[in-house]
Structure formats: C-alpha cells, structure tokens
Image 1 (cartoon, helix red, strand yellow):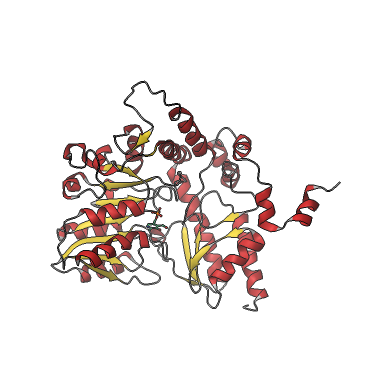
Image 2 (cartoon, helix red, strand yellow):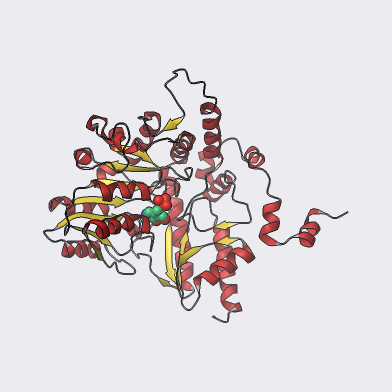
Length: 430
Ligand SMILES: Cc1ncc(COP(=O)(O)O)c(C=O)c1O
C-alpha cells in the first residue's frame, strides 16, 4: 500500500502537496492548546514559553514566516473569538428588533473601549475602521486645505499613506513635499532637522510613519508632533506597524491623528483598523464616507466609523487580539521582538549585508532591513519559499525586510540564515 509520504512524492510535489493535505481549520484549532502557557514558564525559560505560544498559531511548524510586516497570522484565541462572533450574531435573534449584526452605524463601545485603553486614548477619540489605508484616506481628505498648501512627509511612506495625499494633490492642487530619510537613520535629530527645514508658511500637515514600511525605522513621533504643534501644523501619524509590536500611548505621543492596521503585529483579523483623532482636532476633520451621523459633532470620533454595514465578528477577533497581547504582556512581547530582530540583524551584518536598520536601539524594534547586492531579492524570495518554506519580503533590487514576530524561534532564524548562505554558495556569491 502506498503510504502518505510516497503518495505525495508520486502524485504531487512541494507546496501543492502540502496544501492538499492541510488539516481543516477546525481540526487545527482543536489541536491548539486550550490555554496560553503559564507566565511562570516565561520566568524559568523564555524560549520554552515562546515555543509553547507558537502552538497557538496555524502557520505550519516547518514554515518560517519572516513577513509579519505585511500581515500577521491570527492565532487560535483570535480565531475562536471570530467564530463565536459569527455564532452569536448570525442567529439574528437579538433582543432588540432594531439591533443588527453590522457595525458602521453605531458606537460599538464594547470594542472601542478595550482598544482605546490599549492605545492610550479616550473612547470618543477612536473610530473602528478596516485598515490604515482607509484611516489615512480619512485624514488626507478630511482636513481643509487650499491649492498650494503643503503636506510634508518622508520618502519612506507606504502607498496607503502617501497615495491619499498624492491623489488630493493631483485633483485639488495641494503640494506634497518629501524629505529623504538617510539609510539608515542614525539619530532622531536627523529626522527633526529634515522636517524643520522643510516647513514653510504654507505647511499645514506633517505626515509620517511611526515605523516605516521601507526600513522599519521607529521615528521620533513625540518630538515631531511637538515640532508640528509649535508651528500650528497638524501632525498625522501612520502607525500601521505599531500596535502589538511595541508599547505606545497616543496621549503621550501627542500627535493629532493616528492610523493603524492591527492585523499586522497585533495578529488581529484582517480588516480591523482604526483612526485616532485627538479630541481638540475632531471638529476640524470632515467625513470622507457619509451616512447617518456624518454631521453629528456630538458623537465625536464615532462619526468616522459610520461607514455602512461592516463585519462585526472581525471586531470580536480584534478584542481577543488585544486580550491576548495583554495576557502575554506587551513588555514581554516587545522584549522578544527586539531580541529576535537584533539577532537576525547582527547575523546579516556578519554576512556582509549593508544595514539600513537604525543602529540606535530606540529607533528599531521588530523589522530589520538590509541591502544585499548583487542578490536579486525576488529570486531569493521565491527560492526560499519554494524550496524551504521560508517566507521573506523586501524591495527591488536587493533589499530584504526581515520581520521578527514573537512566535518565531531562534532556530527558525538560524534555518533562514543557513538557507541564505546556501543560496549565496549556489549562485557563487560568496
Ligand atoms: C506604514 C504602512 N502604512 C500603511 C500600510 C497599509 O496597510 P493596510 O493595507 O492594512 O491598509 C502598510 C502596509 O504594509 C504600512 O507598512
């Protein structure tokens, strides 16, 4: 009789075969431990604790996922919450006949409250949206600006951050000015000086990523926001990467607006984003999407989450992802992120990579970016995935962006390093 392995060899290969024999989602969830590892295990042996935590994730054991920067993976507690959300809401047996399982028309404070607490703001300053792109579009379209008025941003913004401003520039004649960040940024003052020099009497907004998609640099949000405030300029921050990657507090940062995508580092369901607008600024921001409530200032930032029917179970998942991060502890998560990132970065530098990651530990966290010419990153990316189930991402021609979420192990990183070395040997690049 043909056993499973020989059958795979005979009928299909590699990825296709793996996909064909993937157990059902519910079977995988049933296999995941019902509770999180005890924190006493963390105190005894951090690696053992994280190895236990890894069992909460559906990513196959043999896969090394170094691209959490694009999108995270919702673990068992989050997935269970989403299904519970469906199970509860799809019965359509709500007590109040006016109550429907949709968000987009109401406050949904049971989800806004834990989020507001997690990010350090008031419930009334936060709107549940679907991603950072949507929130950034709200910001860029919502502020009164005349033709010739300027927004200053970095040259490392994501298309979902700079695009909304560029659209407005093309359509209505505002001016987008980009300051070129050094690669790497070595010191917060470099960034402050670049922005300070770019400001003119026409500058209305400073827009910048808290952590850039391009190099993973953590920008000095507090200082940049203070600079903006001192010149009566609005500060708008793209924080797509931040919740779940490192600790932060919106009121302490002091920015006027903040967008995010918790489906990255908080491992929340895809399509759960938010927009923060500081209370004093809310009345200056117009709605982009308009339905019932768009012109009701008293509902504060809830006005911006009136986006029409949307998916409530995603919010159950978002709430569970916040609970998970709190249960583990953001200090532990951030520490793990930093340890893994520092490790991969040091190893890549040993291998001759040019680091585009800040040498200042306060300006990096869980994304290491290196330039490795003459390696063609797409070729490397495809080869690592197809041959070794290692998933990376980067930018052409030779930039690698290596994300180090807490659920990776040092062994995973070593496997990437070994295969990276092997690729270089095979291509006669070392
Ligand atoms: C800094 C930054 N902003 C915005 C986005 C867009 O995120 P989303 O697709 O979730 O809107 C990304 C995605 O990688 C990003 O890195």
